[in-house]
Each structure stands twice: as structure tokens, then as C-alpha cells.
Image 1: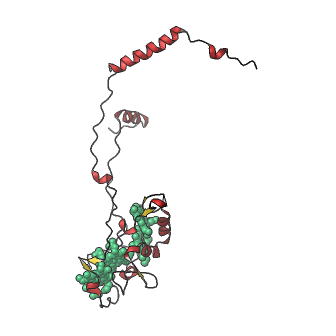
Image 2: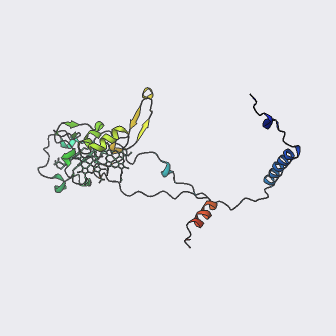
Image 3: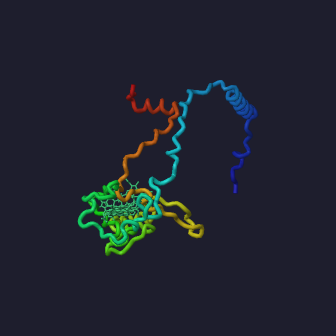
Length: 209
Ligand code: HEC
Ligand code: HEC
Ligand code: HEC
Ligand code: HEC
């Protein structure tokens, strides 16, 4: 039906083709001989401390409850807990600095009857292996987020057949006695190409020196 094919069959004139090929050859020569030079030298890049690439969590999670190498039971078995506020009395475990907001009592967390365990609302034991259930007692929304993978860190596989998720337990990051993080050292600023830096210095008008 009368399609106009003449457009497609138009020939490119020989001189134009030659000019394009010649131009490209010329450019190749310019680059090969490095006629334009190298541009400004890059800043040397300092080696990052390997600490910044370390994927380990802040704390190493203990698997047994010991104090100075001795199991809790070795001292606490058959001994009644102190009456009143053990923290105020400051006996024996004084190197534990309890800075957990208004949560100021050892037995809010530790179990009166089973020293190596922790305590649920009704006094029933929570094991160290399920320590997130202790935190969940008072931090329900964070626990929910953690369970859904939006607080803390997950590793492992999406694919359940390959083993599924590996959650990171609360106390791998938070010290239970002092859960707020101490200030961290900031990593050095990113490396900036001198050309980019020159441009952005123009853009924000005010120089620093
Ligand atoms: C070497 C002995 C020893 C070991 C081991 C030990 N404790 Fe204690 N702990 C004490 C003494 C002594 C006190 C002072 C109060 C007392 O006599 O009960 C105390 C006090 C406490 C208190 C304050 C409440 C209380 O009972 O008066 C808690 C909580 C506690 N210990 C937890 C632990 C936990 C958890 C472990 C194991 C990780 C542990 N302790 C291991 C000797 C020990
Ligand atoms: C917020 C809950 C919480 C409170 C409150 C708390 N602890 Fe603990 N404590 C833990 C958990 C969880 C562990 C074990 C995990 C760890 O050490 O990483 C632990 C570990 C310990 C240990 C063994 C490890 C160590 O650091 O020597 C001792 C002893 C101990 N607590 C004593 C106390 C005493 C005494 C008090 C009160 C002054 C207290 N805790 C208050 C949660 C708590
Ligand atoms: C008995 C209740 C209780 C338990 C159990 C408990 N917490 Fe807390 N937690 C508190 C209270 C109360 C505060 C202080 C909130 C405030 O001062 O605004 C707090 C504060 C914190 C904070 C600091 C929040 C902030 O931004 O200041 C973190 C982090 C934290 N807890 C983590 C944990 C972890 C991890 C566990 C489990 C090992 C745990 N908590 C167990 C009651 C609890
Ligand atoms: C991989 C590390 C990691 C794990 C695991 C983790 N947290 Fe946190 N958590 C953080 C960081 C980082 C913050 C932010 C701290 C800050 O802003 O100073 C935080 C903040 C919090 C806060 C304060 C929240 C607020 O809104 O102010 C609470 C409470 C808390 N975490 C509890 C928990 C509990 C409970 C668990 C386990 C169920 C847990 N965290 C597991 C790293 C972790």
C-alpha cells in the first residue's frame, strides 16, 4: 500500500563516510598519543582501617552464665538474695554499671531462684538462649520490629530450604546493663576526585580559605 521506501534506500555519500572514519582515526591518534594530558593528579587514597570493614557485632554473645569464670550457681546456690535494692548496697558485682534508664533493679531481669536464668513477668525462668524474650517484656514494639527484620540485623538466606534467616540477638549489640551505645568514631569522609571538588567549590560560591 504505497509505503515510502525511498527514505531507507538513500545512499550516504562517500565523502561523508570518509569524513566520519577519518575523524574517528584522528581521535584515536589523539588519545593514543595522550595529547590532552592526564588532567589534575588524584589525591592519594589512604588505606582504610580494617576496623571499618569488620562485620562482627559490637559484643560477643556469651553462651554460659559465669562470673570471673565461675558459674553463678557456685556462689548463689542456696543463698537468699539480698533484701532491698542490691544495686544500692553495691556488694560484690560492683563492676557492673547498671545504666538502663528507670530499669534499675537486678531482679527485673535476673531470676531470684535460678541465678543463671532470667525472669519473666510471673517469675518463670527465661533462658540465656531466648534472651530476646526478656527484652520483649518491656520493649514490645522493638521486639516486634526485630521479629520482622526491621530492627537489628539479619543474615542467612531468603530461601527457607537453604536455612532461612539468622537473626542477631539483642545482646550482640546492646549491653543489657548499659544498652545505649557509647559514641562511635566516625569513618573518614569519602574520597573526592579533584575535578568534582573544583566544580562543587564553584557551585557553593563561598570558599573556605
Ligand atoms: C564468686 C561468687 C559469685 C559468683 C560466681 C556470682 N555471684 Fe552474684 N553475687 C555474689 C555475692 C557475694 C553477692 C552479694 C549479695 C549476696 O550475698 O547475695 C552477689 C549478688 C548478686 C546479685 C544481686 C542480688 C543478690 O542476689 O543479692 C545478682 C543479680 C547476682 N549476684 C547475679 C549473678 C549472676 C547472674 C551470676 C552468674 C553470671 C553471679 N551472680 C555469679 C557472688 C557471686
Ligand atoms: C536489663 C536486664 C538486666 C538487669 C537490670 C541486670 N542484668 Fe545482669 N545481665 C543481664 C543479661 C541479659 C546478662 C547476660 C548477657 C551478657 O552478659 O551479655 C547479664 C549478666 C550478668 C552477670 C554475668 C556477666 C558479667 O558481666 O559479669 C552478672 C554478674 C550480672 N548480670 C549481675 C547483675 C547485677 C548485680 C545487676 C543489678 C545491679 C544486674 N545484673 C542487672 C541482664 C540484666
Ligand atoms: C523490666 C523492663 C526492661 C527490660 C527487661 C529491658 N528493658 Fe531496656 N529499658 C527499660 C527502661 C525503663 C528503659 C529506659 C527508657 C527511658 O529512660 O526512656 C530502657 C531503655 C533501653 C534502651 C535505651 C533506649 C533509649 O533510646 O534510651 C535500650 C537500647 C534497651 N533498653 C535495650 C534493652 C535490651 C536489649 C533488653 C534485653 C536484654 C532490655 N532493654 C530489657 C526497661 C527494660
Ligand atoms: C545489629 C545490632 C542490633 C540488634 C541485634 C538490636 N539492636 Fe536495638 N538498636 C541498635 C541500634 C544501632 C540502635 C539505635 C541506637 C541509637 O540511636 O543510639 C538501637 C536502638 C534500640 C532501642 C532504642 C529505640 C528508640 O526508639 O530509641 C531499643 C529499646 C532497642 N534498640 C532494643 C533492642 C531489642 C529489644 C533488641 C532485640 C529484640 C535489639 N534492640 C536488637 C542495634 C541493634
